[in-house]
Amino acid sequence: AQSVTQLGSHVSVSEGALVLLRCNYSSSVPPYLFWYVQYPNQGLQLLLKYTTGATLVKGINGFEAEFKKSETSFHLTKPSAHMSDAAEYFCAVSDGNRDDKIIFGKGTRLHILP
Amino acid sequence: DTGVSQDPRHKITKRGQNVTFRCDPISEHNRLYWYRQTLGQGPEFLTYFQNEAQLEKSRLLSDRFSAERPKGSFSTLEIQRTEQGDSAMYLCASSLLGNAEAFFGQGTRLTVV
Image (cartoon, rainbow over all chains, first blue to last red; front, side, top):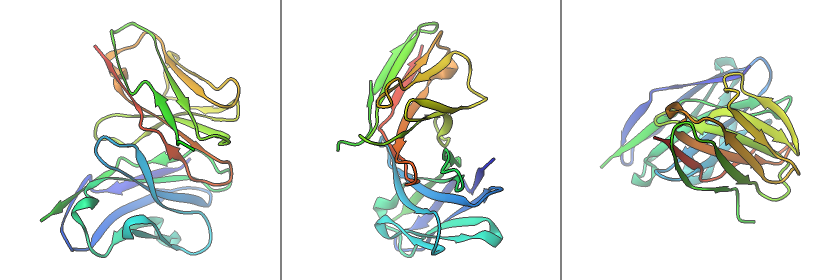
């Protein structure tokens, strides 16, 4: 079974500073990994995904994440935070062998300080 | 393509009543998922379909919950004898098998009073 742990339910960064949201996964098979973002009163939107191939994946709005198998991690980064990045971010995993259901972490709320 | 649509967007019901939600996936998406999300938590997997076949149902899910996707297109989620603990946002998502990207609807917010 797959699972995801997101470290830190709330993260605050100053506008213009580096954003780093941490995600560790557990999977006995090759995983598919995802980051979704949820803005207030809106649905979930895919930021980026890793399936196979290049371990550094780039997503929308300047976000990227790196799949590190040895660390079972898939941390999300953005070089320079913008006020509009304030939202809830969810890391998720699925079974890559079966293209299975997606299991989500509890989420990290990102606050941007002016 | 208008994306995943869910109806209704909001539902208030009295405890003990039955409720049914509808999800229309993106056309031609053969996978359809139901999730539940409570405040401050991530989406919790409930069940999913491939075409009309229900592939898995969460073991944590009460027997009061049932879902169908009779023709492999839209899906319904029914909750019988609602309880206050059922109050949550119910999310539907769809994907194309092999694409590994799920698209989510706006959700149905259920309040049980």
